[in-house]
Length: 309
Image 1: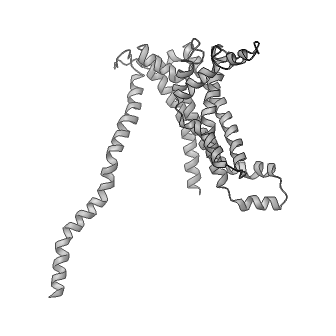
Image 2: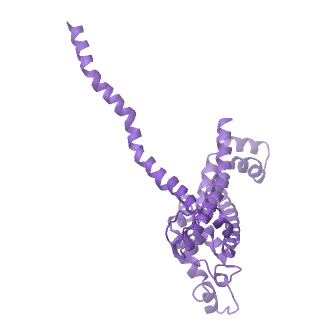
Image 3: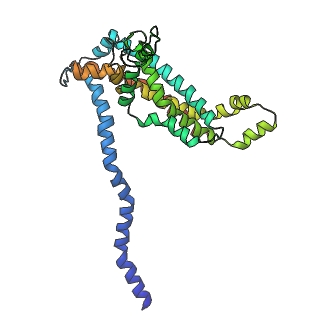
């Protein structure tokens, strides 16, 4: 009789158990579905739409009159676009190299277990808490010849001191490099410091026992072990350089003339203020191509390394 009751209860709970199993199976998918849909529409959908617009004669409003690769041909004969690309090469190269050098150097210093390390680390990381607009406004004021450093030195009596890079069309791009390096080098330092703390200390101790000097240990053991940190930092910094917009707008707005123009400013100006949406879309597709040219080889190397163990 008792066995019959147990079988009866088990049979009565069976549909409920199946419902719970279905919910456990589908609930995570249902919870993630809105995010997946938004990502597909708002990221990949807009990428595809931008690519379509770049092949059309769109001006102030989208148009679907197919004109082929005419906008891309116009870009490579446009002086302003060529200047923006040259500026991006200078800005990106110096920005990445300086951030890597300063960030790695600061991380090595902090890794010596100095006192008040937490306070110093916070000071270096603080610029990352500021928006690029604030950073640009502050550095624009510091480098302004009539308000900032040059005026201060003149007031102190050094009337021959001159620092007018902000208004010099040949040097203005370097002022943006200085501000960007100040903003991002602390973040790179944090990445390198985390990498340094993850290295097995027994390897370093063994090298010391063998008589290796610290510079030799850093050159032969520690820095090669930080290869993934170097790759990750380059990826992040390259991405920041290619999409740089607000820092340049706050400091120079692309000027004087368009001497400090970058591709992101070119895209914004032609898409939203000059009514050349097709040309702006073509420039944004080329920027996307530059990012993919960096991202795809990196992901391929990472996946290949993971596959090979």
